[in-house]
Length: 89
Image (cartoon, rainbow, N blue to C red; front, side, top):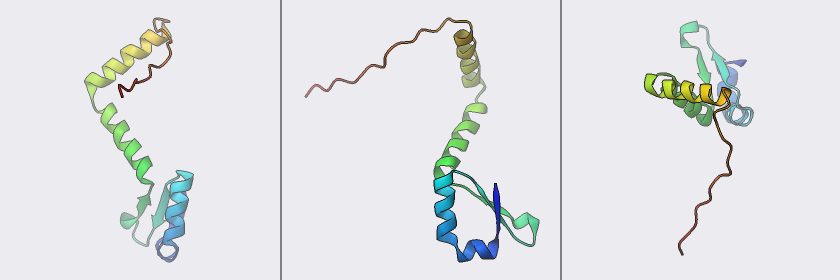
């Protein structure tokens, strides 16, 4: 993760925002008081992190995922082609 001072971040806000979105790498914005330091990340990375945290915090869903993973590792899964939606137009 790259770090940048608040003053540099403020002066080049647009370019830092573009870099964060293009690189999918968070940016640490530092200030004198470490408690005021922030991390800037793209919305898509934030959304992915929130979804991961939701999945990990749901014990029932995690149990199902682990059960499915064990089935795949035991060779009890089958591969098939994806189905396509058929329009009734």
